[in-house]
Length: 383
Image 1 (tube, rainbow, N blue to C red):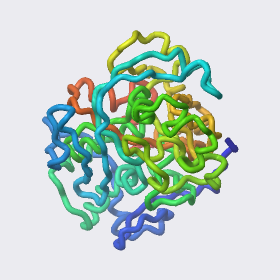
Image 2 (image 1 turned 45 degrees about the horizontal axis):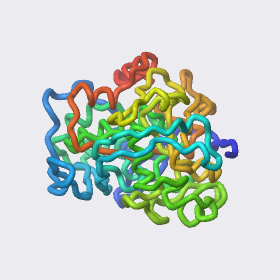
Image 3 (image 1 turned 90 degrees about the horizontal axis):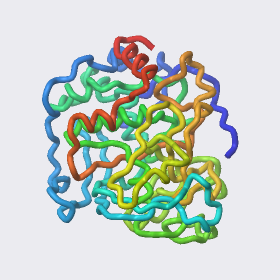
């Protein structure tokens, strides 16, 4: 991977103009109505009770054999994306000892059980993420340009990122391209906002769920086989990526119908990275996860346009590090952006079994006191 240097720092807002296109604009270039509409990005108090359900018939299932693919539409926005069901089952987590380019933290292999879930067909795009990141839904309503929906009071109470100092796509493209450079905390808050907008529980995957979905029944180094020579036909990586990410879905999906599980952008998982974690798991364990208690390292999967071929293997684990935000000019560093990780994105999952309120909090919220302190200060209008 080559070191990444971003362009000169200028304060930017993202705005959706009347024609529907997303633009990165200096704050002073925003239309007056949207400048005035920026205001606080978060309403402090969330209503009691569950958020109203945005009904989509194909999203309803009581058991695994009733699960169907469906298209999620986010009320009050133009955001929409597809999900497919991932059947529950068992698989060997990790790589065999004789796999070429294997890392020591990929073993020992252990059989684990996964409950069924839906997964986003593609990585979360800028079109989806900007609604949350730039509070476009709130800004449009304040400017009289957007509709009000029953879910707004719940979604508006979710913490939103502070405005970035540069366009976070770094001129690699917005329309149809994967969102990048967010911290794991930001990705988790997006899934909370999405859940409040729809009434369905979304989250980022565990690394066991991610690898199970990536393999799609395969036992080879890649979901399409063991041959690195076949990678250029199936994934964007350092050799063929042309130093940029690509629109989702340009290359063939895996057997579950998921695009870009290998390459394009690496994807956040919730787990803390522990090179010895697999050795602590008992055979047949259900839905394992290594809940994080420290900020670094955590797990990303799949490799990216800026990674070498071996980093795209199904079992490869990529630990996060503080160096992913070394060029961040803020003091303290942003809780929302990894300025030096233009290779990093995420996709969403939705479990078939609805979690308890306590479980949803664990999936969405941080346990890191420093992050929580900064989040609360920003909710009160600070930075």
